[in-house]
Length: 102
Image 1 (cartoon, rainbow, N blue to C red):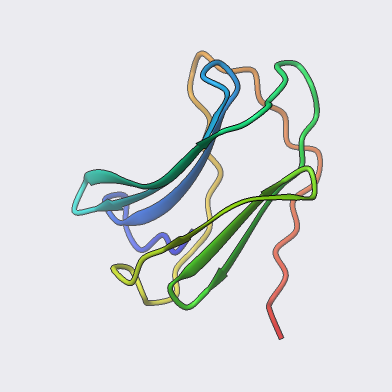
Image 2: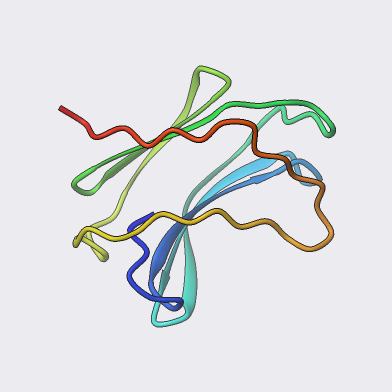
């Protein structure tokens, strides 16, 4: 989210192998973890990931349950959104919604 170039973006990563959810900033190609928590993520199961970005506040929920809120002002301009999976992952996207906030 807020993708402005291949070297500048925020990333929310759901890692079933490590059972962890991470919020990372990539700035100038250098990544830095902003927040991360252990989470009960089942492999080969469906999950709903929600990311709400308002100004410098990023709220992440998994399956309707709040996971964490991270804060960062580095990439404050609007940007694009992208989906990415690792080559060794089995990932399916069933439905993607992008909703403007009121």
